Image 1 (cartoon, one colour):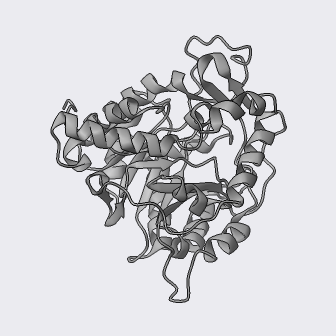
Image 2: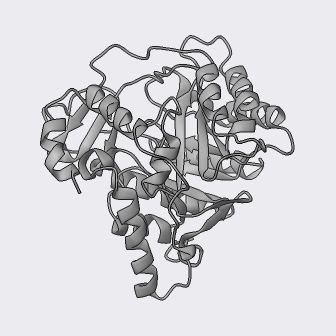
Image 3: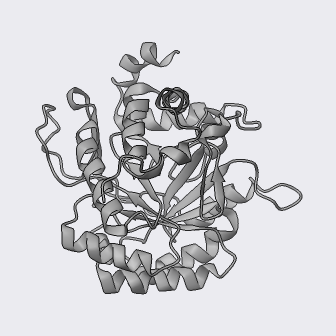
Length: 351
């Protein structure tokens, strides 16, 4: 309730400084058992049950500093990262821009994070005396170091390190801010990458998701779908930020980097539909990009998304947006006559 009053003040600050302040505030929050969710919102993917389909996208909690505080805000799951094997500073500042008139964000952060060892130490503190993970779904998004000589080996190493501490792992090969990273989305390279990840994970590790870019042509989508369907992947995340530039009004429109927020919504929704068609609904899809309301989340769900993730919208709507969207989805289920969110998934998908 305080966010509307605080937002004008926060918007006077550099975006990265405002982000750090928000993390500092969450660190001071008491984090007990996550709030109860409407049972009708539960979704199971890869044997893992998400109590709500509304989660936090990676990029907000890059270093696994506040996952339990975010769960306490009413999110059904939190994805931390992107985490790389070794610490890296990321790209030069300024590298994060609010496009207020467009309700958007452009970033060229470059996987800035404190590295795998620091994240492992924090995540290990979520483990209690019985060595079982604390209540709440916390995924770990993994990526390669910019100067790595073998990026595929980076992903395998991170899988081995993070699998014991993660509810699920996300292989992120879709950032536009690490040169050459998106080349790993190509068919042969992707198969080689996933083979290494699943070998490192072993037979009893957590489910693995793959995060993809929205800037793909039909042939690329079909090639990725074939590899995904032939692999043990539990889900595809559609999508990351875009290099495209739809009409924008902000003075920052010309900044390089990935665009997220409201202008990404139609692009990400179309790509979700493309992957639903290419996979025939045979693999779960997770939607990200421009989701800022219960109606927007509902549109992705009925188009084929099992889960949705938020980040940029919280810049404009505040940290309780996830809880509000979940409540809106519960009401929408009742209005549309569905007994559960799983019944609604893909109900309007074509093909």
